[in-house]
Image 1 (tube, protein in one colour):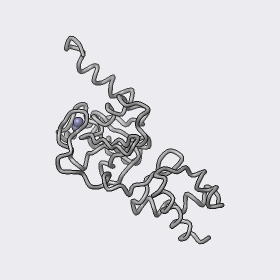
Image 2 (cartoon, rainbow, N blue to C red):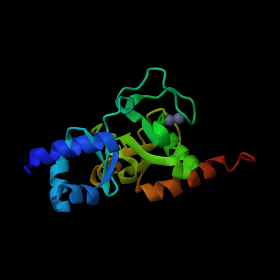
Image 3 (cartoon, rainbow, N blue to C red):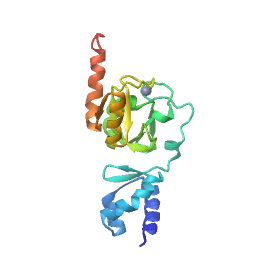
Image 4 (cartoon, protein in one colour):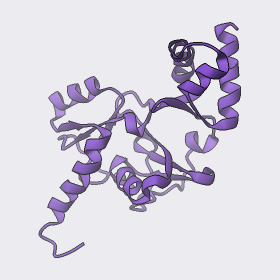
Length: 195
Ligand SMILES: [Zn+2]
Ligand SMILES: [Zn+2]
């Protein structure tokens, strides 16, 4: 099969199944995982699919692309600004939107295992990123006026680090931010009596 044929197949499958692993694709297509990665690259770049841990997810759902103007944050009820939006994809095609990574991450923790997939945007390039692969910056001096402590999202660690050089703050991985954000909120709240 030619690359273009394999890519057509991938698009067909992913539109039906929504999520697939690289292993599955390599098995179905009868090519190496390395070849699958090469086939996927242009599809990821054109935005048809999103790269996830060990696999891909379908991005064709209109709900992910076209925010309704009245969409409000599931966590704080603020109006969702599309450029900072953070979306959680749950079972039965339910999708929740948060105003920014701050609320998105807190909601992610609330829902725990119910989250099938979460996506946000790269702060600089506005590309879509899968949340577990995202780099987060907290404590930067640039205030976007959404929720505090503010959390910015980057696709590449290098970009996050360069951003921190100019605007301050600290870079965290997904696992780290899930620990650091609640910790920081706790510190802020310490002088109020209780939760
Ligand atoms: Zn919010
Ligand atoms: Zn917010």
